[in-house]
Image (cartoon, rainbow, N blue to C red; front, side):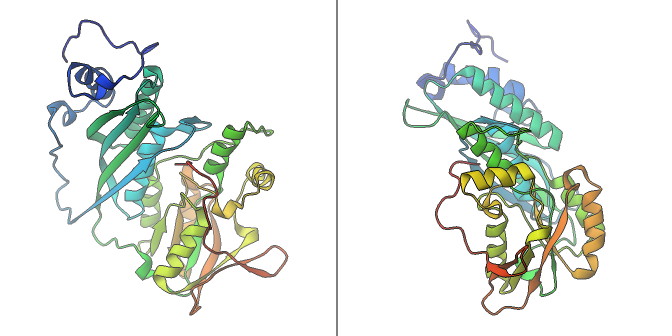
Length: 347
């Protein structure tokens, strides 16, 4: 690593335009921040990209990309750094793949505190280590003050698909059971509560987490798993409408079966939100054949990220491919697409 006349001041320093100019200041930022905390053999090559080997016998690769613009950048249970790692890992995992590598692109606003940037990068590094993935390449740009919002992060992930695994809406069939991996709405409500300075008896934490370990457990228990999706923006309701449209089948969920924390339900009532549409960052929705549902549920509940898993509904024959909910009062109501933006800047 190059020695510089004066190290970056990570206590009081701020991002300036020279950190994105391509000159010495940018090289120092990369060396003393990104390269130091994301350190690995591939990144150490300092190339414009990453060259890496894939496990032997891999027939298919999966790639996913996601941009992260959450506000605030730090929230109960997480921050934009961990979120940017988990979000892309989970997109790869929902294909049934094992994530291996990530790229990371930063857009920084002039004047952003280096102390906060250091905190974000450390959080990303820790999240990647815990998930067993490596950040192998990236990019940094700086925009003028007032033309950004602190920091935006785009991550791209590459993973490998095990032989025999095929997931997707085309496999969903009438009679399939619909499962969720745990309590819904935690992330969106954690963000909104923090913004609005709402307090509850217990702090609502974001559920941000990497889900590929849970997915591997699920595939081992139910190899004929039909489809997976993480209910981020738009929540469970949006995932169900997406799959209903893509599969041509209807969906029926049961209100009493849907796991939602009492604090989240109370916050949603206070804020005028519906938990079905609130974002999650560490939960998934699964579709499987009815005979496999109980074994799959047991496997999910045995995993730390699936302790509160539940079967919440089933796929039904419906030429209109509507999503409906059996209410706690015994009636049914439509669960339509989200109209407008219920929770802005939550991921």
